[in-house]
Image 1 (cartoon, rainbow, N blue to C red):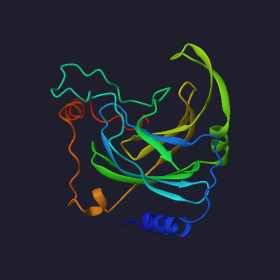
Image 2: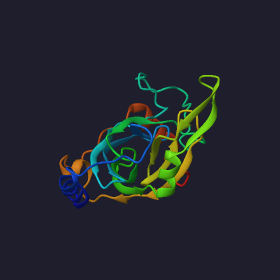
Image 3: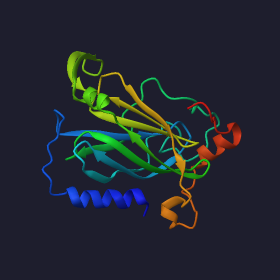
Image 4: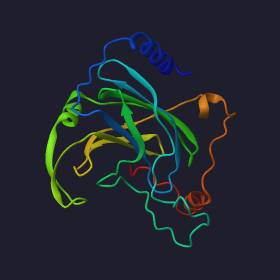
Length: 223
């Protein structure tokens, strides 16, 4: 187990009985992840350090959202329709869940496998008070999904993960425009995948992503 996770566990035990007063005007905030087209990854853990000093281990894990390859398509397409270069102007909410019981985060630790390289990365993303204030602020906006003016919060944090250890975070709401939080370059974890318990073996790429990378390569520098 990494030193950071040991510290997180100890902090959770020490603070577990402390009164926990959430500073946000809603019951839970959402944490989601996505990756560029064909740039598959596996999130081993996303641990949240919240504003009241509590730690939520594995608030996120698993497969991040991806547009291409299509989940149900098994054969390699004759034409690749996805484009992994750069970040979308309006990232979606990603694959994830609501972090129930936690206050707004002040730091998120992410450890993931970049399957296209393959490589294991880990990093911490700081969420400053200015961003937490944005998440507490309700705004009036036109929502194209309902066709009406809505009052909403930016209650979601979405994180994009890319090869080379690039992670970028935004705060967003159902119909509100995303606001960039941070862009960081993660460190390579020398222990390797699964805390060194897999003998250096990574999750395999899908045939479609493997074929795309063999043909076009990985667009490093575009993220």
